[in-house]
Image 1 (spheres, rainbow, N blue to C red):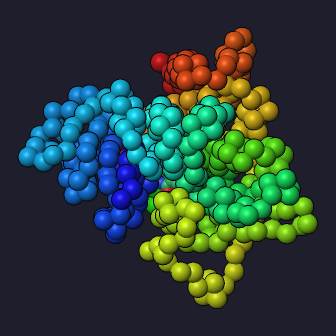
Image 2 (cartoon, protein in one colour):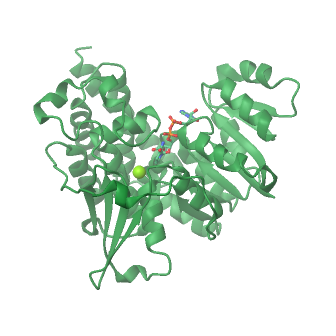
Image 3 (cartoon, rainbow, N blue to C red):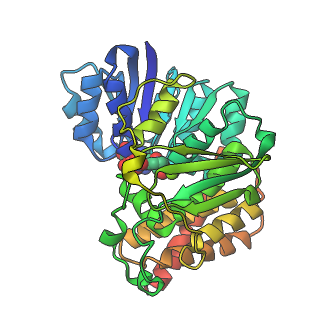
Length: 391
Ligand code: NAD
Ligand code: MG
């Protein structure tokens, strides 16, 4: 039996992970499941899977969780320290699927235990890629990508020499507004931004797909995870979302990974790696699909892509600033304080503001310094947002 823990178990990736492990319950011993506000889901899954412990990120929901788990053997806990404690419990395979920078500390702790970390939480790599990879190396832990593009690249690279790679192409559906008139984007509503043409995902990553911040994060994720240079990474708009990524080699060959837009593929690949096992995903009928289309991404429509390239150029803790500013700008958009195109403007302003303050971007990448930079960038971002909102 493999001991598994799922951080962010109640979310979209977490539920897809639970779907897979529930199909072979005798193969897995569930250690920890975590969530935030959805206590009913967390408790029901923890009972059904016989988890050792269930943790909510919110201290004030501890009593509700205890009540929901009463009569079971599942321990209840709450708060960030409890999340880290749960990540220190021995497990063979840990899914990192918390959304946002909150996923960084539990992921690092799991790596310190030498666990295999299946990483959906791309924010960890954007904020602290060097720290994540260095921690994995020091503790002989394995980090496996769960983003569909990065899983695709990882699979295309199997058995290949990374030095033979010329370029990496990650695809983007273009999100909800790929065909909108650019002038209409400023007035896009929260509802319009919250529906994705191809993927069924959490609300935050869905909005990030419409603004292309998701792909911007993935550019940085590609750079950090595979160690390729920024100018080797390309974004290609591919509205059908069937090719997830391509790797171009020195000899001109392109290896493409093709599959249905179903995260259970990337999750299952990381779960069974280095084996391949049967997965309950649709088998594509390419003759019925007929054709696939591609377009170059437009930097005017999606300034997030340009910002990500600037962040890669700056290096150091610029990724932590970028991520925190992006998360806050998204909070501001969800709260109705800024418009859709205001998000990229806020991120750009915060990058410039923090960049101009000595000592932040160049600080050593420790968890404390990343947290301090994250905190500073969020504060600056709220002040920019409130100023724009006239508050
Ligand atoms: P989601 O919003 O559906 O779920 C997020 C999970 O994190 C939930 O379990 C929630 O309870 C928990 N959570 C939220 N705030 C928290 C906090 N402050 N502290 C601790 N836990 C908290 O998100 P999702 O779509 O499943 O995405 C999860 C991660 O996977 C993100 O980093 C996202 O970018 C990445 N990802 C998602 C997809 C997808 O298809 N959904 C694809 C690729 C990558
Ligand atoms: Mg992705």
